[in-house]
Amino acid sequence: MKERCDHIIKGGRIVCMDAGFRVLEDHFILVRDGLIQDILALDRLKDYKAQSVVDATGCLVIPALINAHSHLPMTYFRGLADDLPLDRWLSEYIWPLEAKLVDADFVYDASLHGAAEMLKNGICLSNDMYFHSDMIAKACSRAGMRVIVSTAVIAPDFAGDPALYEAKMLELEDFCRDLPLAECALAPHALYTCSEKLLKACAGYALKHDWRLHTHLSETRLELEDCLKAHGKRPLDYLADLGFLEARCMFAHGVWLSGEECRRLGASNSAVAICTDSNLKLASGFAPLKSMMEHGVRFAMGTDGVASNNNLDLLEELSTTAKLHKALNGDPLFLPAREAFAHVTIEAARALGMEDTLGSLEPGKAADLCLVDIQNLPSSPCYNPYSQLVYSMGSHQMRDVMVAGKFAVRDYQLVNLDESELIEQADEFMRKIQREMQK
Ligand SMILES: [Zn+2]
Image (tube, rainbow, N blue to C red; front, side, top):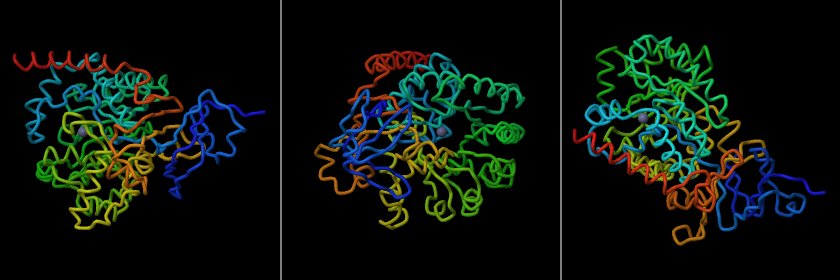
C-alpha cells in the first residue's frame, strides 16, 4: 500500500541550508499539508503516491527566499523620481504623492503587483511596512505569498495618541487571523518621524502583545547627526534606551552603526535588514557588515521599496552585497557564497525569529521552496550551487515557486494572478500619477 502525499518533487540538486549544509542528489521531497514531510533517497519513491509529481531534473531545489524589508505598495512608484538624496526624494516626491494618491485600492493593486514580482523572483515571505496594511495582507494572500504587514506610524498620526495606534494594530491582528499567510508587526516609521512618546509606547506594546517591531534605523549620515544633536545619543542607543532591544525589532538599513551599537545589537534578539541596492542608489553608505558579524548581529537582506531599488530581486541584492563588502574590506574571502546565501534563507528566518518553520529544507518545516533551472548557458557548468546562486544566476531562472505547499509560480507562470492584467493596471496608475504631477 502506497502512502499518499500532496506533491513529490523528485531529482535535481536539493540545497537544504540545514545545519550540515547538505546538498542532496538522487533524492525526492514529500510535501503534505503545507509541510515538508520528508526528504528521501529516490529508491524509496515506489512507496509513495502524490496528486502531483514534479520533475526537478536540471534544477536546483532551494529554500524560497526571505525579504527582510520592503514597502510593497511603492512598486507603483518605480522609476518615478531617481537620482536624488533620501531627504529630497521623500519630501519633494514620495510624501506629497502618497498624501494625494494612497488609498486602500491603490495599496491593494500595487501590493498585488509587488507580490507577483517577488514570487517570480523566488521570494516566499516579505517583512513589509506601509499604510492600509490589511489591503497588503489581502493582496499577498491572494497572490499566495507570506507577508508580515506593519502599519507605518508617524508622530502626527492618531492625533498623537499612541493608544489609538495600539487599537488599530489589534484590529489588524484580528484581520490577519483569517489569513494563514499573513502576520502583523508594529512599525514606528523612524526615529526622525516619531515622537519619543510614540516610540516608547511602541516598544511597550511590542512586549505587552508579543508583537515584532519594524523600523528604519541609521539610514543616512544626516539622521545620525540630527539624532546626536537632538538627543545627545546615536540612533540605536536612543532607541535602545526607549526599550527597543527588549523587544524583537527588525531595524532596516543600519548603515551608520558604530562598533558599540553593533555590540549592543549582537547581545539582543533584534536584527538588521541591510538594503545594499537602496543604500547605494541613494548614496547613503554601506552597513558595517564586518563589525556586525564580529559582534554576532543577526542580519538579513531587504530590497526596500521599489522606488529606491528599483526592483524586488533578492539574488541581485545578494550578489551586490557579497561583492561590495569583499571590496570594502579588501578581502576576497569575506562573506563567501554559501554564507551569503544563508542570509536570504536560514539566517533571514533566524533574524525574524522564524527559523523553526522557514529558511531551510528539512522535514517538519514549511514547504516553501523554489526550483531554479540551471540547464542553460549562464549556469553551466555547475561545480558549486552556492557560487551559481550568488555570482552568476538571475532570478528569471526561478521556474517554480511553492509557498506553504502550494505552487504560486509554475513553469514561470503565476498560478493565482494574471500577469498581463497586472501590467495593464500599473500603466493605468502611471497615467494617473503623471496627471497628478502636472497639476
Ligand atoms: Zn524602507
